[in-house]
Length: 265
Ligand SMILES: NC(=O)c1ccc[n+]([C@@H]2O[C@H](COP(=O)([O-])OP(=O)(O)OC[C@H]3O[C@@H](n4cnc5c(N)ncnc54)[C@H](O)[C@@H]3O)[C@@H](O)[C@H]2O)c1
Image (tube, rainbow, N blue to C red; front, top):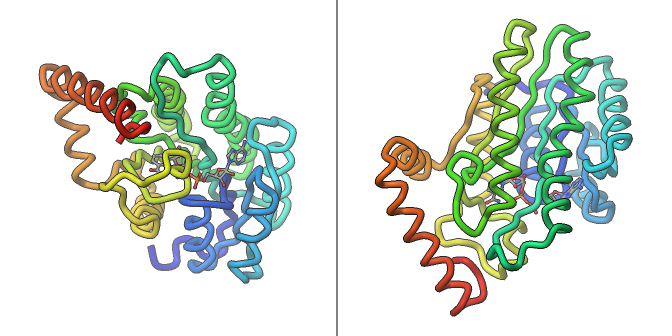
């Protein structure tokens, strides 16, 4: 990835925490210009100041608000006259039994995880067309590749993000616009704060972002990681009987965990 990101103008949503913050850090270290966007103004200011880099710009943005995303994209593109890479990364988790899922929760998750991505695409794609190319990186999830019990709402949002990437990458391929969909399994970030613990198999955020940026620099269409989870997803997708068994067991295990520990793992 050596000089790939140098001088590239990047927008990272959800940049105040976790994967987004690490993306900003590594992009800045690779001498990119980074527009860090997040709805949490305090965390964003702290994150940006903590990086201590000249090429980092904090733009408080709620990705559920079309006009705020529009302003963010315009501001980034106005910096050097182009937007090279948009990381549609902002997102929230959502694992819970169906009986706890409210309509408000549906709206909130779809607003952030799906509409946030749609807003970014809506304003970035025409701009990238006009400038003759660009790169969109949408964060889905392993749960968007293999739908998992007790994650109905989250899976619906992340599967939609995956579908968008799969359609668009072919539609935009001949216009020099790359689309990468990111499918992480568990990564150690504050997204697990609500659960009160991080799953044992979570990988460090530094490792996750290294994998993501390497794939982006190669303009790969999908990045599914870590390797063990990628292979697991492949077998679950390829063998329907295996999927039936695994998912039923997982549903039962998660039900037990909710009853005994109050969380799904
Ligand atoms: N951590 C994991 O295990 C994991 C696994 C698969 C996918 N993901 C996805 O990776 C992305 C980043 O997650 P993370 O683990 O870094 O989480 P995180 O909670 O550490 O960070 C998410 C950031 O998004 C911001 N955000 C939330 N709503 C927003 C909004 N409306 N507008 C702008 N910003 C908003 C939050 O303030 C936060 O700073 C998410 O899309 C998540 O679904 C994470």
